[in-house]
Length: 118
Image (cartoon, rainbow, N blue to C red; front, side, top):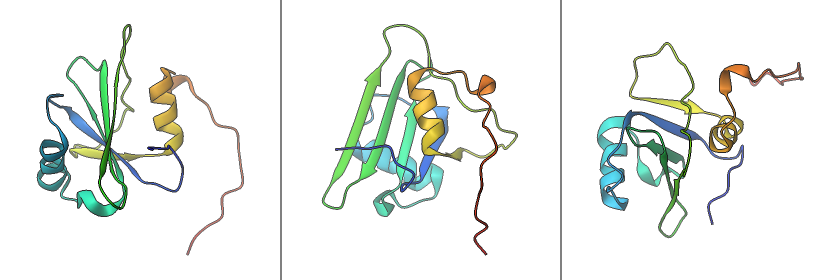
């Protein structure tokens, strides 16, 4: 079962993806476009051109799992970034907000303690 947790890293592919891609096609994108290992345990996120379909691919120790969702109305919103990279790393919180249809630009976080890892 695929769960969204801060324990994982989430990589969002910024280009439109052909949703006919299965396990092997998505692994090819991860290897060639992300320049990462699909067996890393990270979760890789793909959206179609219309942004109404989303696929999440993750290695779960003994095989790959795909989570696939189609919206009947509306679209998914990508986070705005200034980078020209092919993929961006997002937090589990951002993924939850994206999947729930919450506008990312209107979300404001309250101040919280963050431990510096040095």
